Image 1 (tube, each protein chain N blue to C red):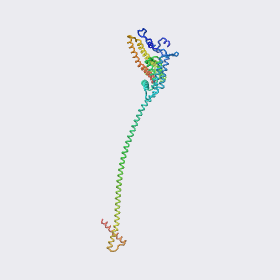
Image 2 (image 1 turned 180 degrees about the vertical axis):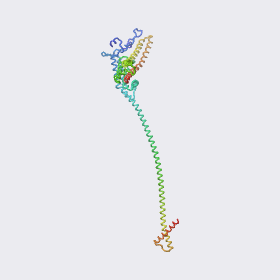
Image 3 (image 1 turned 135 degrees about the horizontal axis):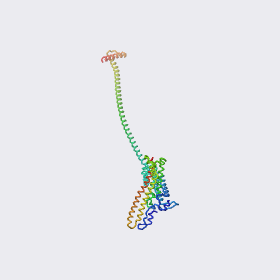
Image 4 (image 1 turned 180 degrees about the horizontal axis):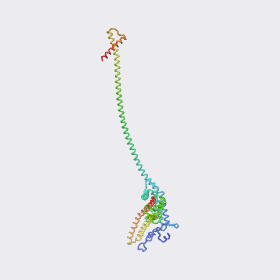
Length: 268
Length: 179
């Protein structure tokens, strides 16, 4: 259970001398719902599975029997699909990006829904704030990136694509090759995962922080006013998170398509 | 190490949990599998069909327009042809009328000439007949008269005709001379 739930149960308030139960990493660790041997089934996993079911369920309902004249649900699905297909894949990769639209669409909606879980009552936890989930997706993007780089350019061309920049002055070549290698092979997958994780982690932390503080300060005293301010901030952060959730899903997908585009490019 | 950190209470948040990694991958594979294999190709096909339907509709409209224009052109051409034909027929009729009139005129002329010629012939024939009968008559009267005067019957036909002919020849010679 996360810190604020514990807090709510404990009913600890300011002036009760029980100390502020500051949220920390413990807010992101859950007791297993059940365990099979050494495998612990936790809340983030349950949420990930729910997200998977929701994404598949929504698109199944929208696209299973598509009609030429779309119904409401199909229209909403089409808007989402076209957003990824046109605004991301076509824009970044071009015509040859059409092949990767299903991959990008899956990433976008899965990530977005996992992020949205952060503000859904009862769920209230961004799945991507558990580092393993962004890592899994970033790893898939990275594998796709590498696979396409070498498939498109061959081994020599692929390596060149990853580390080489045309027209450099000779003395700079070793440095740039090193930097390009670090950027493309190490930084890119790492930042792709960390960016999503950190945004969701920090957002959740802020919401928990202000929620806990609101509860902690809520006493029949002067502190109630500060509790009100804290509540407004928690609500404001929640609203702000809605934007961040979409934006992070969009950025993750956009970067995935930029990497794919880079892999498909001739030379560098 | 993981266990140690967990026991320590402060797990390193940048160490991905293996079980979560597996669950995350599985979830994504299921999403990608169903969306990529079935649902998104479905909708892409529908979107393509819709675009085809719209573009096809435009194409059909364009085709119909072109057809209408072609038909109009054809009608116009036919109308012009008909007008031309009518003018040609009128002209032809006019020419033919003129020819017929000329022919009729010629025919009338010819008939008139024939009638006149027939009249002349008739007149000539009558004149001859009259001349012959007159000659006979004159001869007979003259013979009668001469017979009475001479008292001699000139009934003898041979003589009679000889005398008459002689007389008439005389007469004609005189007439010739007088002319």
